[in-house]
Image (cartoon, rainbow, N blue to C red; front, side, top):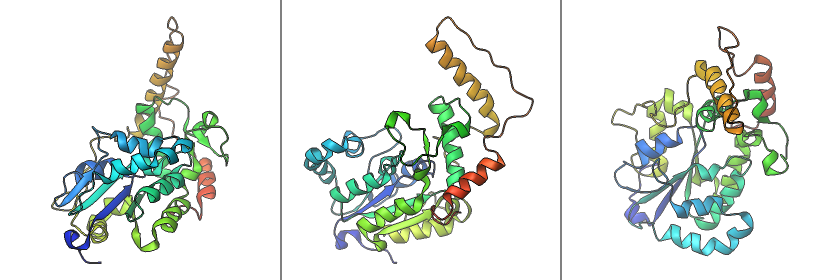
Length: 287
């Protein structure tokens, strides 16, 4: 697909469905926000616009009554002479809510083109685990945080690593049904890392404008939202647990010595095989 002249082709809207832990912040900060010739509409690291928050997080029962207000807030920001790019992790909300977000997006912007960047689901789970240990103070072992139930019942009983969030075929399928096969572009995080020329060429062809991380097409390690190293996890989890105990019982203290000289791997071979067995045939060809 060649580049299109956006001003002649009419209003163009590209929505990046930000799959968490798949370079979404990197794309927002180091590509979309600085690319010439486009209008970038939230979200970015220092700003999560209220209109976008309402779009993603309004209760399902109230969304219909607020639909017109949300749509006006979205459309009044669109520039009809340029490519308009939106990016948010909210379009792929965790907890099995990605198909609901696809429906909301189609109700507001049915003419949009959709970009989805996937990442190996196991690597993505582990990245989320490490990141949330620092950001959300998780202290439990990785396996204890996996929700194997489908459906997961009432929201406050759900564990944070909900496996249908990694059923990429269902998520991408929802967007393709709503927007059409040819209006949904699926790329891989691994291609961005290991074959950047192919990644940026595919993205630019789909967008209709040149989009590239830097003039050489190389991907720098994202400075923001990077997950801590695996070999720091045991100590980080101990610190998190001690903090929780002190907050719940201010006069208490908890000092946990290292379990061993070696760090405990977050995932065993048996657990890896169990997860792959559940994901096989459901996750965009990864397994």
